[in-house]
Image 1 (tube, rainbow, N blue to C red):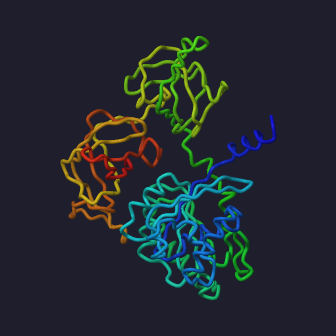
Image 2: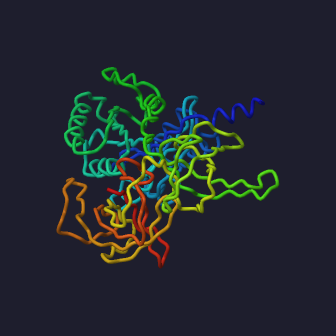
Image 3: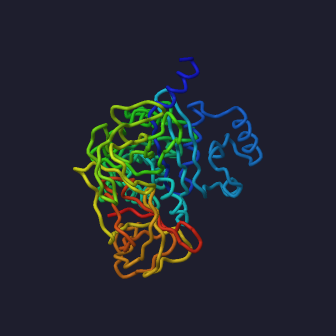
Length: 426
């Protein structure tokens, strides 16, 4: 194997961490990401020159690292984030995908989109202002989306003279309400994104803090246990029939393992048909595997000829998912038009498509107070609510708390093909 191929294989084999940033407006989310990219030497020279020119044109005293993620002209003019900005970088230890999400209330839907696949959420708090309503809002959304790890970065410590008492007070305030959230792992780091304190390099101005830097957490956070390895779920995305002489009888079912693991010889059931078989082989990139596990993309072949197509799911016969047409969902509504009780929508669930009708609204969540409103049943854009739907055929699923892939759906307006809501099955 050549050095280039070895380097490419090494890069592909590196573990991937997806994380999102959240916080109120002007808490410094984009600046923090810019600092991570800059201090980890993940910025090209022409990118650096471009933001230096833009910073001078705006009259900024420092190079404005936030411009690395604020890509829209309206974002740069207002100094805010509107759309979800994705950035990619890597260190010798790990690959990263960052979703920089907006802090404004009217862009809650954008935060849900950016955080839906994250392993970790970075919640920024301005040290001058402490815990705000938006802090509660974004922390609740992180909890709702079952993001396993939350790092609370108390930013702009340079503007409060790196005061330890202010850091301790904000930490205490956050912990006082985080007990109501379903987050397993919460950590705190005092930082200055502008000056780089405790972002990549340890701060000399906060010798009272003996914890890790943000980059150390990103590189060493244990995420292997976040994947559900108990419930084996394989949604079929494509049926492979090569139609070549050497593969004349080959029929493979390709897709990405949503959870669990598979081995040749495993007894499996194909849903929704209910037919059973055994796994004959597992193929990946021309190799036969002895075992495959989430989140690998593989091709399975079965010992029996069964009619299987896109949208079906291959599961272990001794561990079947739940089945129902009446589904309880926690949703975030994306569309400007309110949700219609009795309205009919299309559903996208993993690789399958079906239709549903909204039966009722259980309650709407006030995510500033974390209280349930049972009286207001009008669901408008950015609202979060619990609803019940009735699907046209049985849905095979796991609760979202157990499996973020098989427990999530999107609702689509059939007439316009707009995605109107993201749903988490309760």
